Image 1 (cartoon, one colour):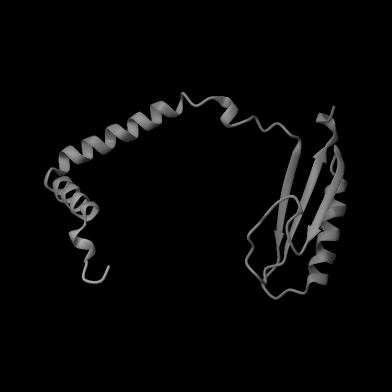
Image 2 (spheres, rainbow, N blue to C red):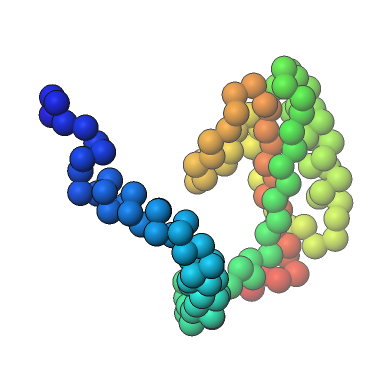
Length: 128
């Protein structure tokens, strides 16, 4: 591709013309973009519920973060106190806690150096 410039390509020329035309006829462009947005909002109502399944699982999550640089043992101590408080809540049947990273079945991208705790509590009242 020595000697070729990207400004001589078909894609660049088409895109350049589209931008220049869109700026020249800005009101038509605004109306067109508004119509596309309205169509998307109306069309979103046609998306089936299977795409967004109901979330009726009686579980809640607590993300507990300590300041960067906090010793992991201090985080564990504080989380143990939090666990005791959560287990005293009415209806809590089971509690799973991870300190230092996310639960194994989740893939989380975490910032290094920020101790993380995640509690997963299950409400026994809604269990079958």
